[in-house]
Image 1 (cartoon, rainbow, N blue to C red):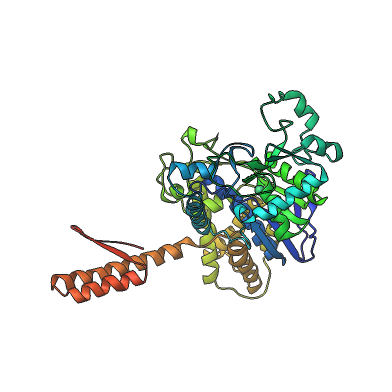
Image 2 (cartoon, rainbow, N blue to C red):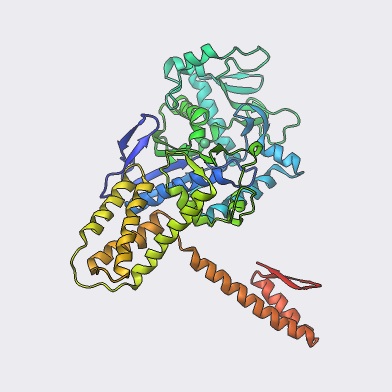
Length: 489
Ligand code: ZN
């Protein structure tokens, strides 16, 4: 904690000196995915952004408790209040249990996040596992007079809340202006005002995801889970709440209001929002044909992709933009990122093979290290930090070409920069190592299958079956076809 970190707080709209609530310990809550589909490009940006934040805090000497939820109930098609539950809808389409949908896409999300080398959160609570806690929060809000029951549902009373506290602090929206420009409700709805949002929804007879409550058999509103679970795992007030900019309103605005209404404090010290991604200048969307899943990116199987891009290329590309700036994915930009990443990774290898002499100090290198840390501690400015690292790569290359010499003191700096900050903070790992491992495994399996083929040719069925069974035990499945033997891990 030797260095002061500054963080841009969405709530105050300025950079602030970061001070933890519990000294030495940072509590971070990030809104995770609603698990009803394949993980896509949109999931990668917040995951990588907050992963670097967690890694950086650890590097700076803090203990971190990182909580990222899984939304598995209550996220309706049209924001919080209307339409079918996204998960129930998918379950109906695919004739599955809702929890089968949740399990399938939670696993897919975890797989993709692992490939992007993001650290698993310390706690990953699910909304459906915290119904009791959410009901308790609703009771407190009702007691405080900021919610009302209507036909078995419970709604947050935004106008009542706004009279005592200000609603709209996070998004900078003014409720009175909003009321003037919004048409009144038609009287057939349960809500009193169009801005009120559901804390509890009574389930219609065909709605399958339902729980008992004092008001009806139903389910919690989407915004509620994050208030309940962040308090449960991080306490009444915690340090950092993160999420995509698309969540700032209404999701986080409602969360903040729920916190104040139920526990009398905002609950969050610093609100942090990452900007969104575009693809070839356009918003990503299924209707635009530019919806790209992470697996499609990694395999290059989407029509818009000219090639496959490795997880580290995607990660590096995301880090090349500041998290508060938009980022545009295109083949050209990704190819450039691929090249940049290679240069950094090559330098990380090269520093191991250089000869270091004496103990003079390369002043430029020393300054670059200082600038890298300065950039990282300036609201996590990864693009500037990387730009300084590229200057350090140039110094490494000059030494490699024999045009200059570096000392043991310089080596310490290079080790810190390429041996710790690159893998530990940026989370960039050398993919060539894992691809050579894959080649090795592939080669060995092919070799064993050749031995089996010979055994079969000699009608030595015992050996052939033994090889098949032993491979199966270690996770290699083989299938005999008329053209030979196929295998998969
Ligand atoms: Zn949330």
